[in-house]
Image (cartoon, rainbow, N blue to C red; front, side):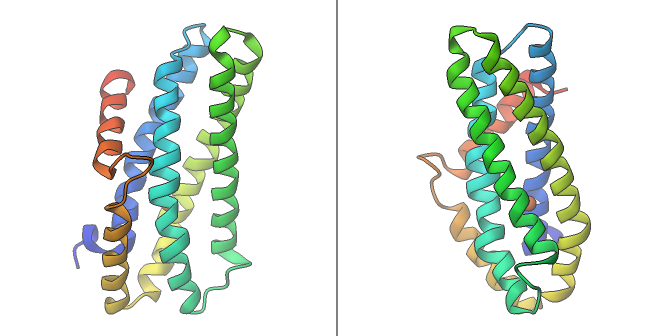
Length: 187
Ligand SMILES: [Fe+2]
């Protein structure tokens, strides 16, 4: 099966897009550090992380891939799945902190900007490490554990999730949002 049509291949592709928006976030925070805060662009990044990275991407992992691995003998409450679930939770909390700081930062006060920077830097470090662990450890185990019919079924179930709307946005809308952020603020 070509990589793109395997369940881990689809998730690995999504990781690449998430990593690009993380690079955008890093650049926006670095600029902010120099006093040039672009709150609108940061809000878009947060929307992307909330709807694409969390709802669309982590949703497929938590609701479909991890249960498939559990059914094939991988424990849920210890080992890689437990670590990934814990990190998803931490990521959600940091995205929430960024969103909260962004709505409080509109008056130009310094304190929410300090909180925003702290949460953004925490998220950058967390998610880059998290993606590396999934790409290099968990997904390699999944490739070994899930047989061809299992892969086929997961891919079909992923397609159903990807066809949903995420607070009114299609997956294509969110990918376009990422491309736009990258073209304006990417390296
Ligand atoms: Fe992932």
